[in-house]
Amino acid sequence: MLSMSYSESIRSGINRYHSDQGLNQPPARPTDQAELQKLREQRIAAQIKNMEDFLKMNGLALEECVSFQTGMKYRNLGKSGLRVSCLGLGKSLMDHEMAEQLMTLAYENGINLFDTAEVYAAGKAEVVLGNIIKKKGWRYEARFNRVCFYEQLKNRAQQRFSLKASLERLQLDYVDVVFANRPDPNTPMEETVRAMTHVINQGMAMYWGTSRWSPMEIMEAYSVARQFNQIPPICEQAEYHMFQREKVEVQLPELFHKIGVGAMTWSPLACGIISGKYDGRVPPYSRASLKGYQWLKDKILSEEGRRQQAKLKELQAIAERLGCTLPQLAIAWCLRNEGVSSVLLGASNTDQLMENIGAIQVLPKLSSSITHEVDSILGNKPYSKKDYRS
Image (cartoon, rainbow, N blue to C red):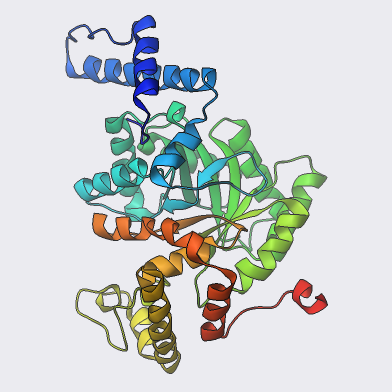
């Protein structure tokens, strides 16, 4: 139900509290499957609510209890009050069984951020996600932040109906954050900002963010929102890994300090390049060998790709010294950036997901000397105005 552990005294205290509230009584026999599901959801919601009340009475925070067991770290999304796990799950999976295994594993390890999109398999990915949420009985009382990521459309009506359809597929009343993916050059910025403000005012989302927007476009959205008393974005989704650093390390920090926009990053392993499995070739059944990924294959086999593989061999030696894998080092390296609120993972199986989650244990090992050594190998550290002044 919740991924946390308690001492025997706290566990017995919760049992007594539930007993006083009448929550330990066996449920009445339902008349049909639908009623059974409804009773189960009501019971879970009541138990979670009373558990949170008990923790508050004893000076404990639910987030701290989860973090204590799993090691998961939680950060504010930008300067908003929304707390998200530093790792999120953001891959489209159509296999319901595997998707359920991954989501359950992520949830039990403290991940509370799940990313989906209406464009993933024409909305079928949202249906899979929604069915799993309903089956598990996960509700907002469990502090389960559901992040819906969807394509920006051309006018307010289209965005409203698009998000409404997504919510129906997800079987949710609202999502915490909705993202506008890529700005539309044919749509005035004011219209986009008003559309996002509209879906928030209608209760379909709590916040909105941008994805693959330039700093200038984000700043324009903020200025328009302030000018017309609308709601500005709280974060930007950006690609960030060892071979792509400029935007997240130089441009977004300036926006964070000026207007409070945070960073949610994706592709920490550079589409699998940093996994170390390519090594100058493309193994069968790897992503680069699939139809539609010729661009990735060409990138790996290019001269630049060979230089990157040489650097990864040097980084592998650092990973071995730290007692971790190369992917864990790469993900921890992304997390060491305090300007990153959360890193979205794209695991395809449970073993891969557990390996990626293990990056949290590597984070404390990334001393300034280790970070400097990594920068020396990469040779691509961007310099901001602050670096030039110092």
